[in-house]
Image (cartoon, rainbow, N blue to C red; front, side, top):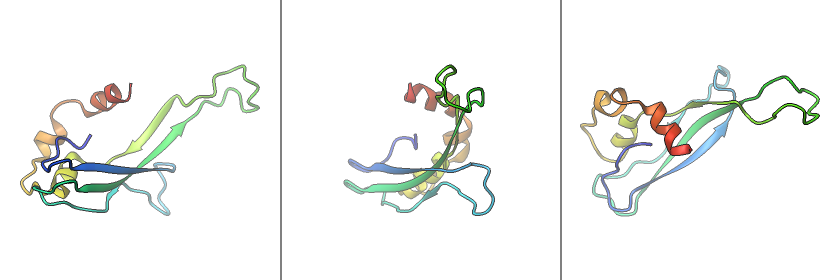
Amino acid sequence: MGGNLPGTKMSVDNDDNHHEVQDTHPIHLPEIDTSCASNSKGCTIKTITVSEAIYGTLDSADTGYYPVSASEIKTKLTSRQNIQEHAGITNADFHTLDEEGNRCADINDASI
């Protein structure tokens, strides 16, 4: 979901950490650990995201009567602008990449 990457066969390798997203000590934030030049061939950008599955409390004994799957997943992602900058695009525009459109709907559509 970082947008179109400029290099040949450039990719993103993400490690999703499962924590409470509102943790403040230690704080868990998304990060980008590597960068590529915009003309890279086969370069991989390594990223970390944070997710928290939200479960209902109707069946704390887990008897199977109520559904026990997550009803929501809270996430922390880095911006598309940040991904593009780490892919070597120095003039990546935050407004165009992150504010226009509906990123939540795009992510939901891709996951379904």
